[in-house]
Image 1 (cartoon, rainbow, N blue to C red):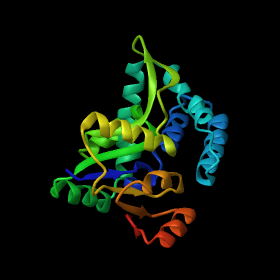
Image 2 (cartoon, one colour; image 1 turned 180 degrees about the vertical axis):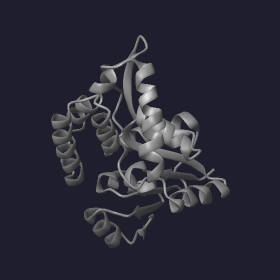
Image 3 (cartoon, rainbow, N blue to C red; image 1 turned 180 degrees about the horizontal axis):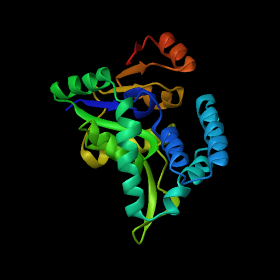
Image 4 (spheres, helix red, strand yellow; image 1 turned 45 degrees about the vertical axis):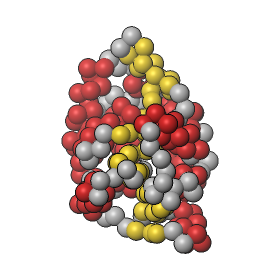
Length: 217
């Protein structure tokens, strides 16, 4: 089967789920508002610039998971998905996914955002295959650390290669949709790279390479 791969933030979503999760935690009083706002803005700017230290960011981003029990976190997540995420899912994004589903393609979301946040978002699109950064768990609680390789930049390529081997899939005829220049390493690996609402760096790269460029609103 042909593989259709989707980035999540600012691609299938009209926003960034990691950033929205941070804002949500501030809104409900779960984290210090001044510190969280300052750090989220800094890390997001570094991500856009391509200078993000992913391990430093994840140490910050995963800390609230370690500070609360799973039942509380899951209740927060249900509210977060309903109030923050569902409004970010557009009709064109759903239509794109459904077009590939109707064609019989294998659907896969690959994202740097952690799986605790993104698993229910993938479910909202009806996509069972998800490669995301995995937060470590021990004895039923999150530790605040990362398990394995973060799904970021070249890490996405490595994680995808592991997934392909485990699922008996291949890259033949594959398509990958992304908005970010941070995903160029993976866009270079697929047969059909597609830049979606691309940032300036990715748009220049896509135009130079003759890649398809589309808008999802």
